[in-house]
Amino acid sequence: MTPSAISHEELAEAWPVLSLEERLEGSALLSRVDAEELFLRLDSHQQAELLMAFQPAERRAWIRLLPPDDAADLVQEVESEARAGLLEQLDDQTRREVVALLAYAEDAAGGLMNPRFARLRPDMSVDAAILYLRRQTREHVESIYYAYVLDAGQKLLGVVSLRELMTAAPTKVVRDVMTADPLSVPEDMDQEQVSHLFAEHNLMALPVVDAEGRMKGIVSVDDIVDVVREEATEDIQKLGAMEALGAPYLEVGFRAMIKKRGGWLSALFIGEMLTATAMGHFEHEIEKAVVLAMFVPLIISSGGNSGSQAATLIVRSLALRELRLRDWLRVLGRELRSGLTLGAWLGAIGFLRVMTWQHAGFYDYGPHYLLVAATVWLSLIGVVLFGTLAGSMLPFVLRRVGFDPATSSAPFVATLVDVTGIVIYFEVASLILRGTLL
Image 1 (cartoon, rainbow, N blue to C red):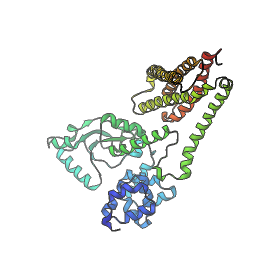
Image 2 (spheres, one colour):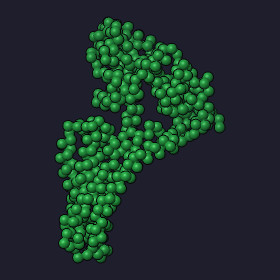
Image 3 (tube, rainbow, N blue to C red):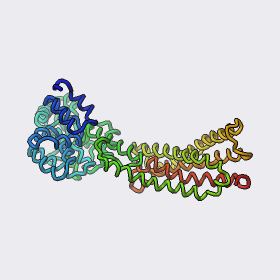
Image 4 (cartoon, one colour):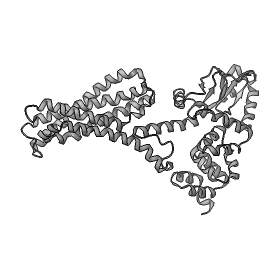
C-alpha cells in the first residue's frame, strides 16, 4: 500500500475497528501533515494510546501539537507512572500550564479550560488592541472568539468581540466598547452545568474565574460538544441498567465490560426473584383458575413498559432542565391522568381480546369469561397506573437525595413494576372471581 492509497479521513473513519498495530501501520502511511491532522482529530484516550505506542524519542513532537487543555486530557489518560515522562516532553510554559490544569477535577470547568486566551487592557486604544490581538494569535493563542479585558491583578472586567473592535472608532479605548461584568463560571463548576450555560446563552466561549474573580482560562464550544456527547452517552448507558463505560465500546476490555454489566444484571436478577416469590404466594389461586396464568406476561410487561416510558421521559427532561425538583407535584398529577387513561385503553384492548377469542372459538375461557375479561381490564388499569407513577417519581426521589436520576433505569423500574404487577393482578382477580373461579 502506498501513501496515496489512504487518506487521513478514511483512516479516521476506520479507526474504531482497527487494532493498535493496524493503527500504527495506517498512520505510518500518511504524510506528516495528514498524520498530524489525524492525531488532532482523535479523542484524548485514542491520542494517549497512539502516543504511548511510539518510541520515546518520537513523543515530543506529537504531544507538542496539542494546546495545554488537550495535553492535560491526554496526560490524564495514561498510567500514573508514565505521566512525568510525558510532562518532560513539553516546553516550560506549556508544562506549567498543564500541571496547573491537572490540579482540577477532570469534570470541572477548570479541568476543561484552555489557559491561553486573548487578553486586553481597558485603557488600550482600539487600534492598539487589534495589533496586540494579532501578535497574541501569532505567538500562542489558538483561536479567538472574544477578547477579555483584565486589570493589573488579572481580574475580569469585561469582554469584547472582534466585530465590536473592528467597527469601533480607532481613537476609542477598549473600556468604551467592552461589555462590562460578562457571564463567567467558577473554576469548580461541574461540566454539565457549564454545558447548560452554553445552551442557554448561545455562546462560543465562557471565561473561567477563581474565587477572587481572577481569570484563569476559557472553555470553548468545542470542549462543550465533547462534554455533551460524554454526558449523553453516560445517561443512555445508565438507562440501559449498567455502569457508564467511560470509553468507546471496542476499547473496553472484556473483564471491565463484564464488571460494568454484571453488577446491575445481578441486582435486577435478584429483584426478579421477588416475582417468583409473588407468584408462589398466589399458587392456590393459580391452581384453581389456571386461565389466570395466561395473562401474567401481558399484565407485568404492560406495567414495565409504561414505567420505562415515564422514567425515560422524566430523566431526559431533568437532564435538559425542562423540569426542576419543585415540579414533581405537577408531574404527579399529569402522570396520574396519563396512567389512568393509558391503563384504561390497554385494559379495553385486553377485554376485547378475551371476548373475541371466546366468541370466535379460538379459546374457551369458561362460563365466567366476562369476569376474566373484567379482571384483565381492571388489572391493567392498576398496573399501568402504578408503573407510570413509579417511573415518573423515582427520578425525582433520586435527584432529591443526590443521586443521578439516570440510575432509575428502565430495566430497574420494569423489575419493580413486575413484582407489584403480580400482586395487583391477583388481588384484583381474588376480588372479582371470588365465589366463581376462586
